[in-house]
Length: 166
Ligand code: AR6
Image (cartoon, rainbow, N blue to C red; front, side, top):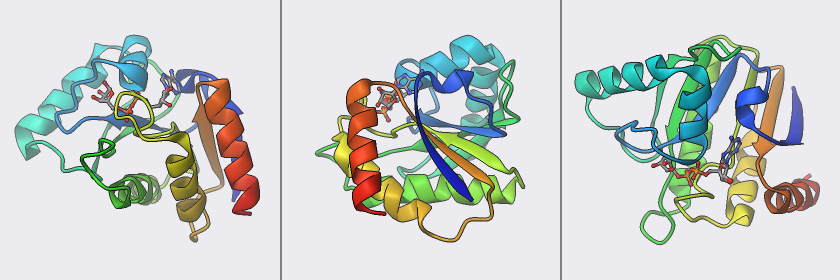
């Protein structure tokens, strides 16, 4: 398994599955979620609403899957991260682990993840980077994991923490 750190827009990445930083209601109004729907098409939002109608809102740390619309990926894995100061960082670890578990279940080989909870939800990049480093070290049956950072700052912090954490 190879882990890549990359800088840029996650909707441009070629991977079988793309993880979205979602909220419990899968209403993709801002941040990376909005970028995914804008580029992938409104079917992603419609499938998301259908999921919530059927199963109810997701708990923090949980994931749901939709198609990826017009994006190159096969699936979007919507992961609900915690809100800083309200929900603990163990939920961030859960959201990351559940995303990778779901990717294995879907039998995909490559997955791209954003820095969940570090935008609108307010978590420091460093906390997210440490949680990612920890979870990625577990034994995953995936060929390629791409961690996609949107800002220079995020990229530099992740690079430093990934080096520290080996
Ligand atoms: N590609 C990669 N990363 C991105 C992109 C992009 N196109 N756009 C933003 N980021 P956020 P959250 C980074 O706010 O904090 C939404 O409204 C961004 O710089 O997308 O988990 C949802 O619907 C940050 O580092 O997610 C929820 O209501 C990271 O992605 C809520 O925001 C996550 O920022 C979730 O908040």
